[in-house]
Image (cartoon, rainbow, N blue to C red):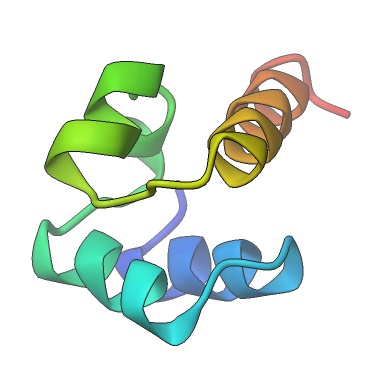
Length: 68
């Protein structure tokens, strides 16, 4: 399972800002929680305002779930 730090590293690699990475860390988003996030969670709970980044995160989550 991914740690909070591993989630942060992954977010950075796909283009998330330091602020977004910190939001995820503040909310203690680890791998088990990452897999359950919705577009609404990203926007309202985690402050990911850019639609493109929200979609990129969701596409990445789907790839992780499918083992790619």
